[in-house]
Length: 227
Image (cartoon, rainbow, N blue to C red; front, side, top):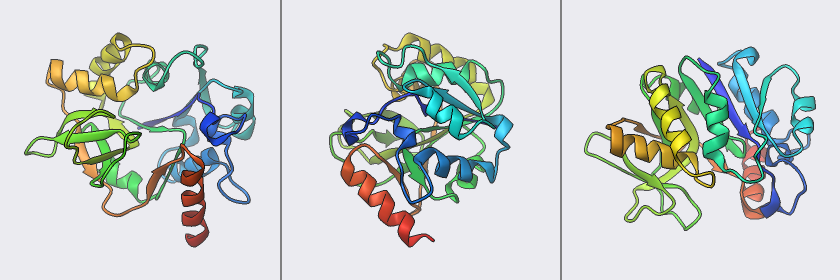
C-alpha cells in the first residue's frame, strides 16, 4: 500500500502566501502534519509520496522522512496532473488525498478494508464548490464533479485506486485538460471504460477540506474538541 498527498497548491482563498498544506490548524500542527500523523498509523513513511509545487521547500523541510515529486507546472495545472505525477511512480494499491483535508483517523481503515477502488463520500446537501456524486443501485459512482445535478452528496477528498485500475486511471489523467480536477478522470474511466469506484460513506466521521476561512474555523473547532 502506498499513499499520495496532493500538496502542490497555494492557499490564496485563505489569504495566505503558503502552500495550503502548510496552513496551521492548531498550536503545533499544519494540515500536512495532521495528515502524516494519521497516515503513519497505517502506512510507513517510506511509502508516503507528496506531490509538491508552490514553495515546495517548506513542505520538504517539515517532513524530510517522506518521498517527494515536483509538479513543475503547479501554477497552470489542477489536481489531475498532480495526481498523474504521483501515480506515475506506483505499482500497487494507492490511497490518495487532497493536501487540504482534515479527517478522522478511523476513516483510513474504513477505506483500506473495501477491497476495490473507492471514493469517500458524505450524503449531505452541497453547494456550488463541493465535488458531488451520484451512484448506481450497487453503490458505485456514476457521476462525480462539481456540476452533478440531483447529487447524493459530497466526495470528500480521500480516495483509493486498486492496482488493477492504475493503468486505466493514469490514461484518463493524461487525457483530461490541465485545469481539470482528478474527478474528471475518474468519471471518464467509469463512463468510457466501465471502470468501477465504490462510494464509501464516511458514516458520521469527520472529514472536511479547507478552502475558505470558515472551513479553517470549522476544522480548528473540531481539533480543539478532539484532544
